Amino acid sequence: QVQLVESGGGLVQPGGSLRLSCRASGSDFSRATMTWHRQAPGKQRELVAQITSTQVPWYADSVKGRFTISRDNAKNTMSLQMNSLKPEDTAVYYCRQTTPGSLMVYWGQGTQVTVSS
Image (cartoon, rainbow, N blue to C red; front, top):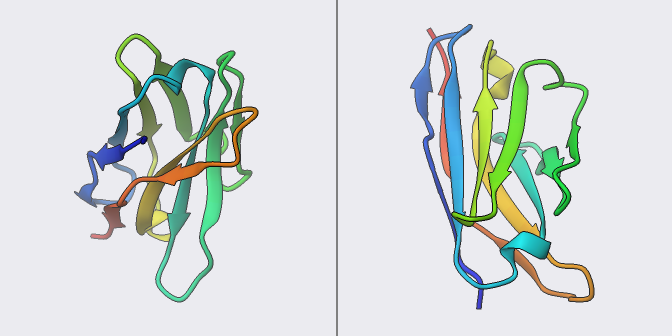
């Protein structure tokens, strides 16, 4: 059983930065594709960034150039460095783990990010 725990959310002013972390339990982390999603009030959950087991990143257009996704397989952690934050980045941010060859999808409990002056 995989458990994902996010941390690092909070309140930040526009233009500020936050770093989110996702710690995973279990032994499949190094083979997993890890993603960050977010859900703003009244909106659908959306994919923000992805990093494959081979460290290939992908970003949604809305965050490209501002957010950086990374992972440390030795520590079973994934991070999202968020710079130049905007009010529209306000959402609950979730990490997700999927593993090739498995139908299982694991989600964290989410961490709130609020960008406001």
